[in-house]
Length: 363
Image (tube, rainbow, N blue to C red; front, side, top):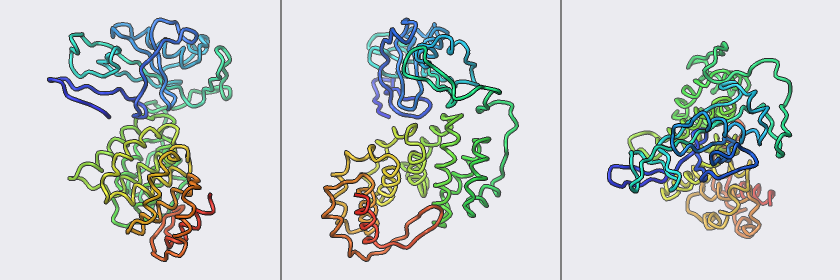
C-alpha cells in the first residue's frame, strides 16, 4: 500500500477491505443509484459509496446496495444484512485527493468522509441491465456466513495436520466451508521443515482460502497481509509464505489477483527469485493474462546460474504462451540439472530440460 508522511498525518491510497486491492475514486452513476453519492466497484465484486460528510451512512448503505444490484431497487430492499451481504467502512476518507487521512486535517480541510462497502453473497446473480436481476435459485433458507449461529464443523490442530500429511482435500475443504479458523492451523504448517508437508499445506491453504472467501473474504485478506509481513520481516520465518500467497491467488485470482504487484515488488531480493517464479507460474496457469505482459522480463532468466530459476522461468513462459521465448526454451532441452517439483500433493524429480519441454508443449 502506498503511503507517505506529512507532519503527523499518514496518507494512504484506499484499498478494498475485502480483498486488499487498490480501488478507484468513486464516481457518479445516475442510472444505477439514487444519485446522491458517488460510487465505485472493486475488481473482487465489492461496491462502495462515498459519504463525504460521514453523517449519512444510512444513505451510503442504500446507495451501495442499489448500485450493487445494478439499479434493481426491489432486490436491494429485500436483501438482509449479514445474510445476503457483508459490510465494511473506511473512515477518514478525503474524496478530493482520493486518500485515507489518518488525522483530522489535510490541506486545511477537515476530513470526515467514509467509504461504505458491501459485498453481495455469491448466490445473488446480478445481470447487466437495471431491473433484470435473478438469483441462482430459490432461497429456501438463509446461507451461513461468518458470525452466524449455525453449528460449525470444528477441527483440532492434530486433525488438520493429519489431513495435510495424507493430502485429504475433500474433508479439509468441508471444514473450511464451515470454520474459517482452519486458516490458523494451516498457516502453522506452512513453516514445516519437511518440504512435502510445507507444500501440501500451502496448496491446501490456497484451496481452503477460496472456500472461506465465499463467506468471509476479510479473513483471507487479513491472512494475505500477515503472509506478506512475514516475508519482509527479517525477524520472522518466511518459509512457505510466498507459496501460500501464490496458492491463494492461483485458487482465487478474481478476488486476490490484485496482490500480484506486491509479489512483483519482492523480486528485488534475489534469494526469493526461485520461490517467486514458481508461484508466478502457478498463477499464470490459471490466469495467463495477469502475467503475459511481463514475459519479456522473464526470458533472460532462462540462462540464470540457478537451475530452479531456469526451470520455473521456463514453466512460467510456457504458461503465458510466450512464443518469443521458443528458441531460448529449445536451448534448455538438454539441460540435465535436477530439481524437485510439487504436483497435486506429491514431489517429482524433474530436470530443467523436462520443464523446458513441457513449456514448449504449451506454446
